[in-house]
Structure formats: C-alpha cells, structure tokens
Amino acid sequence: MTPRVPRRPPGRAGDVPPPEGQGRERGSATAELAIALPVVVLTLMLGVGALGAGMRSVALQDAVADASRILGRGDDAGGAEAAVARADPTAGVAVGRSSGLVCVTASTDARVLGSIGIPVRVMGCALDGGR
Image (cartoon, rainbow, N blue to C red; front, top):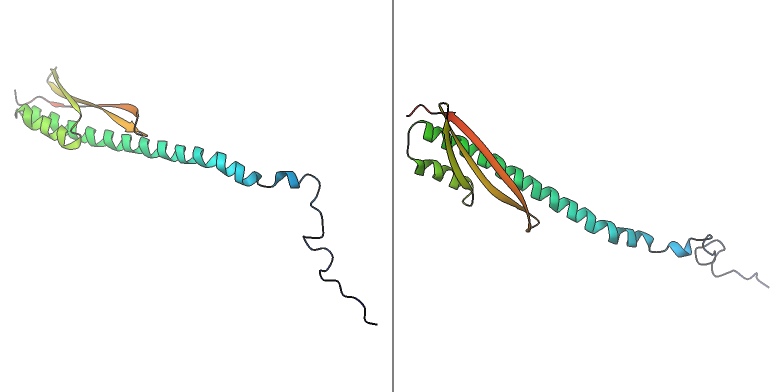
C-alpha cells in the first residue's frame, strides 16, 4: 500500500490560524489611509494657495515699484495705474507724496481654496524728482 500524500503541506496560510488579535486589525491600514488622505490633500491645497498668494505679492511689489518710478519722473497717473493693473487687475491703488518721495500702495485679496481670502498689501516708493 502506498502512503497517503496530504493535499496541502502543513504550515500554509490556510492551515494556520492567525495570531491572537490579528484578525481584528484587518483593514486598519485602509481606514487609516481613508482618514489621512483628505488631510494630506487639504494641506497640499493650502500650500499651493499660499504659494499663489506669495507669487501675487511679488508681482504686485514689482508693479508698485514701477508705478512709483513712473510717478517720480513726473509722468501721468494713468501709466502708474496701468502698471499695477497689468500685475493684478483687481488691485486697488493709492498714491501718497511726502518728504520728496512718491509712494504707491496696492492691495488685493488672494484666494486660497476658493473662499479663504488672504489680504495682500504692498508699497513701493521712489524719489519725487519730477515735481
């Protein structure tokens, strides 16, 4: 008579019961990912929005510097406002003169996540040599 050969060798995953407590933790990695993924996405979106606000601030800073130099040379205010409008059409512009300086201030709101407004206000001054 030939010895009987078992269908599955002992020690395979189907034959050994899971260690104590391991059966209750099945799917925990999926649950942790489901909780952590929205937090990661929200953090990335806030970071991208903050970068956008920073880029808008830099563009406005360059524009108000140009606008103050335009006004400092004695050119008309329309050119200065156009310089700021090229950087951000929604920016408000204010001009002030004192102590031989002409200062241009631009302010706007940068939107983060579509609804959170971050106020951006920049100022640039130049010598008022055109007067």
